[in-house]
Structures are given as structure tokens and as C-alpha cells.
Length: 313
Image (cartoon, rainbow, N blue to C red; front, side):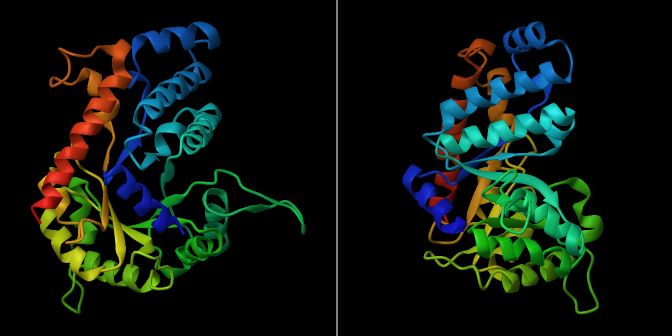
């Protein structure tokens, strides 16, 4: 079961954080870009090859201290077919290094289209009556619930069938999330509270040995007060917490998504780790040639920051 595997890794590494692999070509050190552009051309292929090398360097240096990585599909799709190949190679490499892979695709649609999305990322694609094959084979996927249950059901079914996980958008970290998610319904509850109740209901049949469900939620660190409410509403849901670091969320903010047992959430950081070699805090110690070492140092700092905040609960 996905959620048990995730918690096992969190406990083993004493680290409730995940590294977001959201690469843009301007994040990548010059020496990698120059080499790949020289070999493959200054084109989408060269960019994708640079992304792969950059990602592998990051994975190599953090794989023993973090439980999972979270590649964001948009940062691969923008490089076309070669970018999709880079996503696949990155995901496969991370899994070879013992990391869980959370595909951040926020997928959703109705009926058979949702089934197709789920087959691509969580399940298997049927080639004929007897043959199936995995496409991306992620361990978990972020999903958008705002088309209702028929857009979520195929993902839940594949979670059960293939021991996968999903994280359902409940309260996102962006500034304008409240335009929809904070609206109050006729029953006096906000949209995000209603969605949290649905997540709790959807996940009750996918609960693992630690008492948490493989049907989790996304709740941004940038909204700590809402996180307190949502933690109480989704007692068995594991919460993926974006917004820490570059988006302004703090460890204290993120801690509201955890339970008293120190479990219940995993906090994501992307730019602050990928681009640590550019950060003011690390610039005197690292440069672009040691980008991976800077990423590890920032990942370790984040781990300690989050753990201290959790211990104060």
C-alpha cells in the first residue's frame, strides 16, 4: 500500500519532506547546459537532456535523506516529447534509487477520460485482451476533484488495485485559491471544508497499517489557519503540503497539517532545494559546480526545520 510505504520511508529517514523536481532551463547550471546544447543542439532535445542530468545529480545527492520526489508534469511538458521522456527517465531513476515518486499532474476529467489518465500514471494500459503495460508507473498522483466523484473514482479504484496513492486538491497554496475554495455554501461550510469531507469519505477503504489512507489531500503551507481546520476534518488523510520555502510558507505554517504523532503530512520544497546553489544562504559555500551538494545541504536544513516545528506540537 502506497501510504504505508511512504510512512515507512519517512520514519526510516526521519524526514517528512519531499523534493519537488520542477526544472526550468534557467535553473540548470551553465556547465550542464553548455555540454548538452553542444552535444544535442540548442533545442528542446538539448534542454531535456540537460534536465535529465540535472535531476539525476539532485537525486543522487538526496536519495538517502528524503523519502520521495515530486516531479511537476508542466515543467516537462513545456519541452514537448523530449520533456515527457525526461519525466519518465527522471521517475525511473528516482525509483531505482529507492525513492517514491509523486507525479504532480493535477489530472482530472470525466468517465473514460479519467480512466485513461489513471491508467497512464497509476494503473496499466491494455494492449489487447491479454496484455497490459505500465506507462509512467508513478507511486502517487495529484488530482483535481472539482468535476465531482466520477472524475475521481477511476483513480481511487487504481489506488486499491495497484497499491498506489492520490493527493486530492483541497486548499491550494496560490494567492487566488480563495476565489473558489473559500466560498461558503448554503450549509455554512466553505468549499474546501466540503471537499475535505469528501476526501475523508473517499479514503476510508484505503487505510493502511498506520491508520492513514492512500487517498490524501493537498493543503498549502501558505494557509495555516485553514490547515488547522482541515487537519481536524481529515483525520486519516495524509496531507501533501506545498508552499514551503520559495512561496513563503514556514515550518510552523506547515506543522498545522501534522498530527500529534508527528505523522499525517509531507512537506514539499522545489526551487529552494533545486536552486540552493544560487541562494544567499549558501552562495559563500557552493557554486554551480557543486549544485547537488548545495541541494543536499538545503534538504538537510529543511528536514531539521520541519522536525523542530513538529516537535513543538
